[in-house]
Length: 463
Image 1 (cartoon, rainbow, N blue to C red):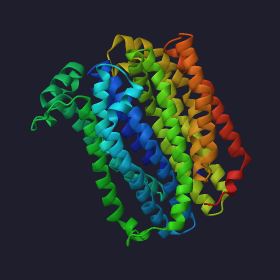
Image 2 (image 1 turned 90 degrees about the vertical axis):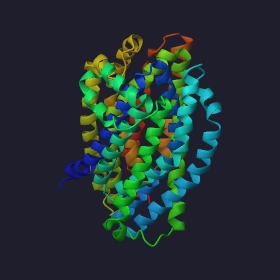
Image 3 (image 1 turned 135 degrees about the vertical axis):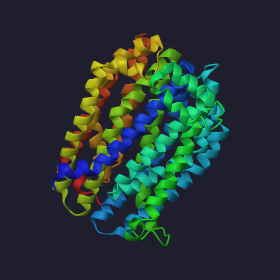
């Protein structure tokens, strides 16, 4: 089988699982959007904060995927299994104290990002619930990294569809209540009112944005349960020697060494992007709500491309483990082609149909007018972003996690944040000011990582 087909077959379950997650998150966005701009701003703030905190566990996930795929290529299946246990241990050690601190200091954290009499209170409730479920999210990441690394990506598709369907069901009922959900569909989506029968047998209290967070946490717990069944009650358990339980200290040190740079990078990036979005909140609640809607829509192209990148990373790690560096390089080239197809197509849709797309999530006239041009500009950037995503995940898979981290963090703090503030606030360009600063950021990032891959020194890294 050719490399293109191998990547595609491994990536397809990841792509569809990511699309499932994106679709469900967009449905959630539409539900929260029915509560008004204040609710959108509250969930945006909570999402930014939790994203910043969970970003550290992306480094843990990457270390698990990198080690499990490399050991798979070396035919050391037991070591692949040990990378999973190491990842779980790292996730628990990190997430447990953060859950406690975040839950108890949610109000102080929220007020750093948003100071609004209505939205801030909503955001505090929303954030507290998500902090309480942080450990579940972290363990999900570890399962995802391990199963992707050993080429068992079909599992993600089944779990994503079922968990996200549960998330939508719970969110609708918990946000609006069993009675309010009927009114929501009758007002916003009259052709879909038959769905209200799903909530008829139960009595849900209306919790607003807090209900959206609770639905997400419960769905995350359901995902862990499914991952456990698929992993420990199938051949995976015996093939990768998952029993008896055991840690490999030598491998743990390697995973920490891999995870730490990326975890720090992801945390620094999340904080940086949080301040980027904070610039919009300084402009006003409408601007902040608008960028939240636009960035959520962008995930429709971003997350599937990440799925391709993850498949690419698995094969890069495996081929390097098999001492086939040319095959690893060919994998990157073919992954770029697939990513461009996906993100390019979505980018064209953003450019041609921005207003109808935004109207799926809000009917607010100000958000529609402001977001139309912004979504068009971001649509143009999809082609550049596809390159950056693939280059970044490929270098991480090879064990080079420090260089991409330094490049992206440097560009974010030295270019994007200062230029966005100067354009948006100082020169009073407004909403489009920070968006005009994005093309240079994505262009330089892609060029630098592309040159790094071209140098080929990543092929010699041992992990």
